Length: 400
Ligand code: PLP
Image 1 (tube, rainbow, N blue to C red):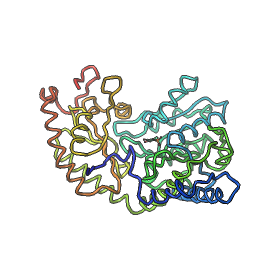
Image 2: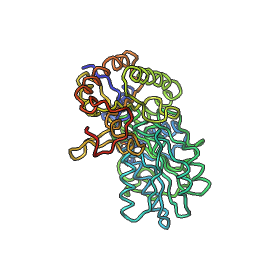
Image 3: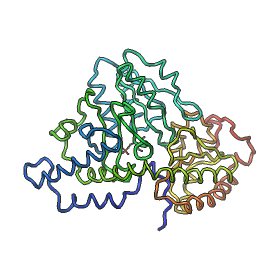
Image 4: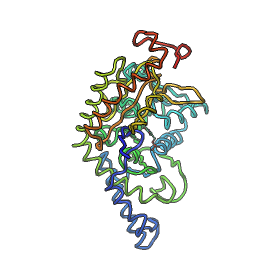
């Protein structure tokens, strides 16, 4: 089946070169890297090489990299490690548009007695920096702000946020799961203390991630067990996926330098093509500070899940900005935080590209989307009532 896959912020295709690098660690090289014999030692050396490769991708030193099982574990480890290392401070600053991996943990911590400040964003999804500065206090233990948003692709001013944290001696964690491999991420230029990344977003397999911990950062392990990862994360290493992450990092480093510009051009072609052919369609998110592979487009007065189903019939895989929670369609917390009208938030589709996509695929989507939108709108009572564009509706008013 010929799939047009434009859902790369959800997960990516594992690069064949990554699979090839991993295979020997499922077959002949099955030793335990902690074993004393040379058979295990070879595996341990392969992990060291992967650590160097991941470190190189973000310009870190290899001993600042801890392998984890995913981006979520990296986030949880960074946050838990920091708050347990600084027990006397109880305030955390984050944004209102973090991925659930971060957002849900902070909501949990807020219930446990932490004071958590959620920095708002504007209609473009850009961070309210005045609000951020106004809420820094002497009690702030941790600032945790994503590098780039997974739904809109908006890139946050992480340099400035990091400088503010550094100046005040506050620990800075960034969830860079969507940024790494798409835009340059350099921890020497941007002095973050902790940074999360995930393998399956950069053409490595699922089940592996990494956490960067700047040398000298206070750190209390989250997974306490064996001496693996220098005692910072117990548990026998998921060797093959770590080797895969290493290989994917080498490829990602090259892609960021040379390949993402092409991805950006494809994204722009798709975006312009759709916006010019479909009325009442708009791009969500600041287009001047955005990941090159992402566009989030609202098709007003219809709902995203119906659009996705029709796209699915044509083997086009994307995702929507509304999710079915307990039987009702809820726009995502990101689009709600941006104040996108209900009628637009419901009909939002995220297209996230990779270097595997082609111009022909973009043109196919551009050709097939207008009739899909048209068909759904003809079935939408609200569209037929001729409500003016951008009418702000409350959830109760919204018929979708
Ligand atoms: N953070 C962001 C911004 C993400 O987009 C994701 C996954 O979509 C995660 C964290 C979680 O990563 P993982 O799926 O590796 O746990």
